[in-house]
Image 1 (cartoon, chains in turn green, yellow):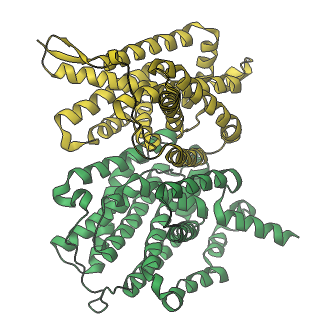
Image 2 (spheres, rainbow over the protein chains, first blue to last red):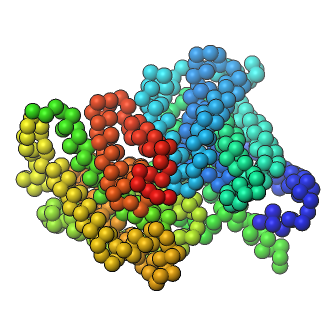
Length: 330
Length: 287
């Protein structure tokens, strides 16, 4: 753990060192521009990946940093999607305000739910997140007069971005928009994680009782990060509603919650880039194997999960960093 | 003459008995080892498919397949416990959730590969069809049989836990694992046996459930959610809690579908959330 290694350094200089941008980070974000030039046929997919990466990032904030295992995070993704979709249908179709409305509505829902979440740990917590996710899914299905039920939300009409960029068939606007939103919110999440608040969250993950004993308001911290995470997930949902101009019922479903959990774990939880890498690998693999029957796709996902838990406990990035450390030590 | 609400109540109790069989094993093993086993219904599915296979390809009678369903699920669960679960007892909830969800995914695909994705038809013996008319209510014979099976299993389980030496060891291990092992109880072995018995009961439940809810590869997930709700509502490690929760959820589900069909499954999620808000450890759970 890097925290333990540098325990002697002054806290401020430790936090400053953490926030410095490395060469790999810069390269990573420059590489996200490549699809514009080299893979123009895949921009729609790239846009989906960027949105899913934002969703995975939001889950990583609570899973990787605060240690909250959620089996119902799609509740916020779906809430944001429906909020943005309905806003464009009934109020107006300007995308940026729609995005903000989606994020704010979801943040409010997340804040309300966080009062329940912060009281529980372990099995009861997993069950609560699962139950809340299922409850919202069932509610959206029942309220088909509003949500369109299983047919999906129809009549979403998004105006051109900034009044200039039309939503083209190739997805130039969709990818550019999703990527910018992802980057801005990533910067925000990065700032949160490298603040004293972020350190307190990691303390709660490691030992909630001891954090309470040294006077950290654990529950208030969990409520805050849960609300932030919900808002980011809601923004991702709003993006998917706006770029695809529809909202499907499965945006709230259990499968989506399970998939995003798999992505974060695959990439490596608690590493900020874990969710991004996981989303990239997962979505690309699913696109490549889209020809096979869904049930066999899940067979490989299942095997992958078993293998990751058994052999790669910290995901792809955890394995890579262990490999690098091993290599450097030689 | 009784009003139809009693009919709904009876169907709900019969359904609750099914949920009880499916979930009691998970409740006890969770209470014992804190191991979050989301593949529990995959073991139940093993029992269901074992029964279907024996009836369809070997012409066994329905009742003959039930013990085999129990044994098949128990045997498969022992293998998994030995090979995959044991290394993870000390790991985080997240690792356990992921491993067992992975196993459940694989089981769904395997069932689809070997048996196809369609619902499996089964032939019940003739005397299991039809219903009795009692005071204006239709009491289906099969549901009556389910209630009887549930009652017998409950009596056997409570007797085994309260009166036998092994039961005392299980209770001790649920109460305080370290203390129990300090007193010379082999907690790992106790756990392995309980795990196998619990999975066996789930397998039996899986076989009995075919007639009521059908059997297809998605069983491992659709009923997992019900089972988890029952476990959470009842409280970990409590047989009486599981029974009470199973009946509560069974009756709420049937009543919800009968009186408020537009709400769908909404009602049971609401029941679960309210119970957990009121008692975080479940109705009869201690932790």
